[in-house]
Length: 394
Image (cartoon, rainbow, N blue to C red; front, side, top):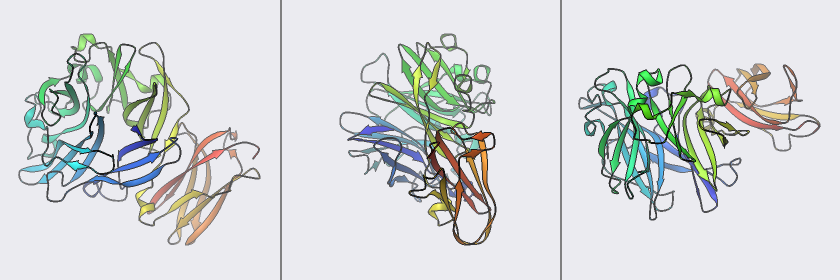
């Protein structure tokens, strides 16, 4: 996320849920907004290059702003057997306007640059090296630190957060080893990825995604390069903010002194945005979320679609329009902002074309409270979602 020239710019991975794994996550999307609610899709900024090192997947965009350029760090996946079998490496692109990007021709950092990692590009698990994020060095002016997720050589199957340092040339990096506090003994998980930082009143929060029961977890410290003894025990995002167990891959962005938390939601297939209210470390809370839902792949391809009709708010109802290409069974479910299922609005076969479904504000547990709801259309060939803002008495 970045605020620039009157707009928020959000860069994200695009996933086509209909296609198999090796045929999707092939580009990075770019969308803009003036208010974090209404979004306008912009042209794709980076896509895979079939004849280059990033020929299979493009993952994990991360922005860095300097006085002269915007830098976009990303993970490129190489499939060029026998030398490279789904090998993950870190690349970089630069831009002067956020719309036109120039890619550096080769990876700038990979497992061969970090001796502590398990590095065998001939196997898919031998090149796990992804999710870069770059921040200023806290004690050396002009230097930068890159954090990323990688496989540990000494413990097969264990990922940890690694660190590299640049003396100012963002194309050149030197290994600084792993953060030992992100090992399994401290995180209870073997997959540690998507590092993210928040800096609040002298305390550093390190967030990451794991498979240890709840996805997003965090630790705090006053020395982000310190040994495990200088980090607090792992805490769960769910402990601070209930109903966040479907979120993963978070990041933070500070604008006008306020912190915005962003994370992917694997249930709504959206990016959820929350303003953060920081308490006494390590505590915090989220304000009411905004959900940034991008078009499903099925919608882009002309598949099933649900949307809220213009002028549908009135006479105590919201009206949805469901569009399908041929007769098929359709389920339309309503969820509140916490992800809780609150009402099934439709469960039957619909004919080709457009059909309307009305909602009068009734939920399974009573009347709807004012606020944002998500309608999710599910069909045998794909799904779609739409946001509805309900105000009682309309």
